[in-house]
Image 1: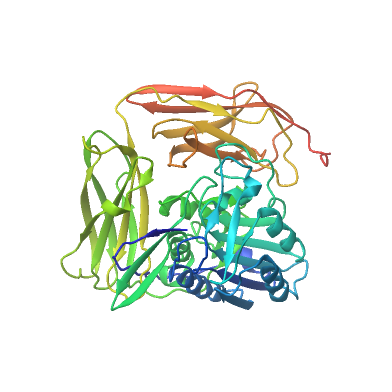
Image 2: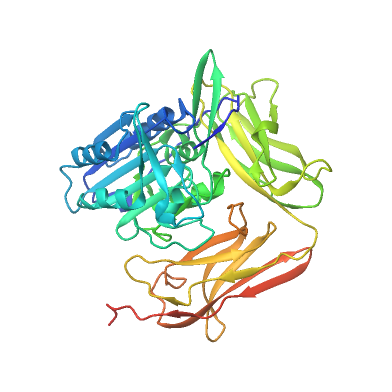
Length: 491
């Protein structure tokens, strides 16, 4: 987990909501274990970010309409894999086949891209003892627990635990199969937290956990519940993060799980905070432009804004541009525009920037909005290509990695085509690229062998088609043929 030393104060908000939780009618027994580490021997201390993450997650889970039988929190108390294994076994000792066991981890993550993804590790530390927990270790510990496992990870390189966001395809995906996993970053990316000092006390939290909490929280009106059915599925939570979490690339497994309720909503309250953030556009071309957006306030509030540019392949937090309303705004709708400086002769702007919107009223800061902005060049060769496995069997939860290479920002259409050239599934449609820190740079996508309607694709040959437009010129690329093998349990 990396640090962002911003000094702005953030706050969540309320929105009226009535839910009809269709996916939550038959409630399993729910138990949760929250493990966070702030004090390390080999890495920078992150206090109080992980502690704040624990608080946000515990409060969020306590709101679940199904009711958790147990929510256990361990902050800076677990420094060895054996201690972790014992704590997991104790917390989920009563789990049965139909139960759901949720594990949330906030800590430093490490990964050496020169090695395989199974060399990635989460650091377990109590400030005095520190050990690495590798994917195979976590898999073995979870396998001792009956029922469904949900794993939420707020850590650098956490996507490597599910083989996602990597420059090279993974050797193995230990947590694949029956687990539900949501990660804060791809395997090649850092994850970030912010920290501020107000009234002489440190406050802060991870960007990932703040945005996830905001999307699923009752005080926010459950904005991640896109279809407003009262159940925020794993897929809806991932889509919310992809749209509102900008600093790194959230990863999910399974990729298309729209039938598992990650959170079940209760009743909300009346709107009191910053809501309904809408951006006119988040893809630009040219040297300079203005970012226009709107939002609504339900109560008097002072609002702040921050622009963070990506320079030389990294987020330049040290030179972030900050703005703040001179005084509290009254309730109502507001439109704002910020000047974007997309080119500077003294700086190498990579083509991406991040805009953040903050509430400046509350003692406990919570991020309201974080949006990625892509800056497309006026022209130039994009060096577009696409890679995929030559043979794929879509069984046992397997997902085929699809890597689209492009050395500049772009907007992608990525489709699966059959041998007649017909599109049977879109993996991305008008999707703006993100800085995933691949070598060479590009976009990671995943195909589970299903068609557009979700049904299994027939065995046979397929290929990936990619297209994008730069400066009015259309670029396209095709993968080699993919042989989709018959499913062993097919009729």
